[in-house]
Structure formats: C-alpha cells, structure tokens
Length: 128
Image (cartoon, rainbow, N blue to C red; front, side):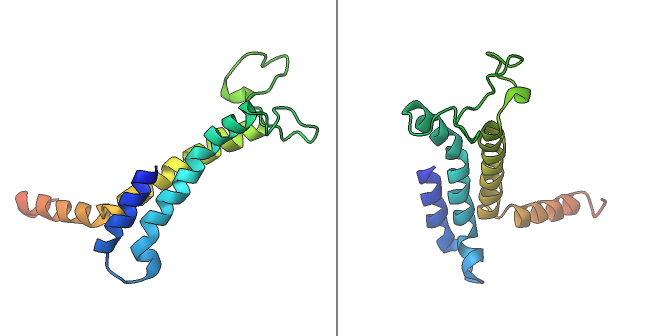
C-alpha cells in the first residue's frame, strides 16, 4: 500500500495544476483507502496481542463474531458483531472502493473512455 501511495504521489506531477485537490486527490484517496483496508488487520493484531480485549463491558470489544448460542463457532455475516460489521464490512469495502476510485482518477479513465467512444464511432462510420 505504501508503494501504491508513493506511485500516486510520483504520478501527480503529470496532472495539471488546476487546484491542489485535483493534483493530489488520487494520492489522498489511496492513502485513505490504505488506512481503511488495514483497519481490520490492525483490529486482529490488537486483539491478538491483548491490547483490545475481545469482550468488554461496554460491548465494543474487538470480537468479530458473536459468541451467542446460535452463532457458536459460525463465521457468517449474520453472526458479525457491531465491531465486525464496522471493520470487516464497512471499512474494508469502503477502502477498496476508494482505492478503485483513486486509481481510476489517477489513470484518467473518463477521458480515455471518451476517446475510445469517439474512435469507436469513427470506425463505425458515425453509427451509434
């Protein structure tokens, strides 16, 4: 993830200087995506080294799955705890979404798609 963020930073020098966010936006998205993607792995590590206990009195322990009678030993979506949903589903999927958006923005995919469409129409003789 560090290499991806470094590449985004390196490739930002090619983008126009319309605004700071236009130039460095893909880099920011990839860095934010990295943090979201790594959140669940960090939760696992904190649980393993006993910094964040799996069971806490306030209910926000690091346990990914519920230990109720109906979920005993099952690792399915319906048995995820609140922390499990937040870290496993929300943070991970949001992180990969941001990574995709940042990568597509960096590669300027919209203008390339428009160019492809124009060339396709030219090859087809202007027919849609």
